[in-house]
Length: 254
Image 1 (cartoon, one colour):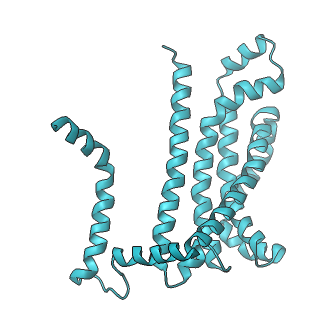
Image 2 (cartoon, one colour; image 1 turned 90 degrees about the horizontal axis):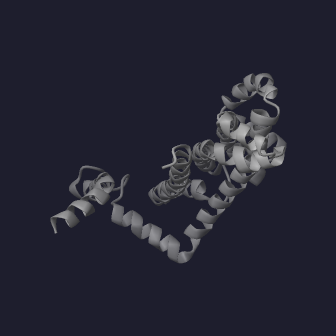
Image 3 (tube, rainbow, N blue to C red; image 1 turned 135 degrees about the vertical axis):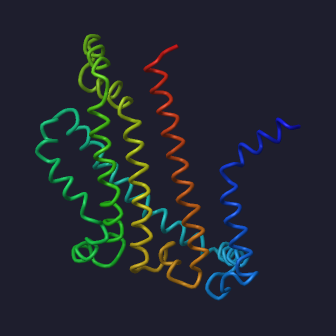
C-alpha cells in the first residue's frame, strides 16, 4: 500500500502546483481576497466555458485558431526544412552568405510587421497567417541548419563507402541524424506561433481564441489557450524525448 501511495505521489508531484493554483483561484474571490467582478471564481469560468461548448461557439473559436496555427506551421515547415537542408548540407557556403541577413530578419518582431502584412494582404486571414508564419519560420530554419551540420561525419563516410548516393545519404542518414534538432526547432516555433496567433486574432476577426479573449469570456479563453498550449508542448516534448532517446541508443549500442 505504501509503495502504491508513493508511486501515485510521484506521478502527481508535478500537478500539485496546478491544483493549488486552481484552489486559490476558486477560494480567493469567495474569501474576499480578490474582487469577483474582476476575477470570477474558477467554477463560474468553467460554467461559462461549458455553456459555450454546449452552444458550439467554443468549438468554432478553437477550430478557427487551430486552422490558422496548422496552416502557418505547415508553410513554415515547407520552406524552412528544405532551405535548412540546402544551406546546412548541399550548399554550406550559403550559410556564410545569408546567415547575417537571416539573423537580422529573425530579430524583427512579427507583430511589428503586421502593418506591412496588412498593406500587402489586407485585413483578413492572409495577414494573420503571415505574422504567425514569420514568427515560427526562424527557429525551425536555424535548428534544421544546425542539425544537418552536426550529423556525425563517421556515419556519412560509412554510408558513402557502402555506395549510398546523395538522395539515400539525406534520407537514410542526415534526416534521422538531424531530426532531434528539427523537432526542437518545431517545438520552439510552435510556442512562438501560438503567441502570435492570439495576438493576431486580438487585432481583428470574428472567430478564434484571441477574438474570444477580447469579449466577456476572457478567463474562459485564457484557460482554453493555456490548455491548448500545454497539449501542443506536451506532444512535441514527447516526440523530442523519444527521438533523442533513439539517437542516444544508436550512438551507444549495448
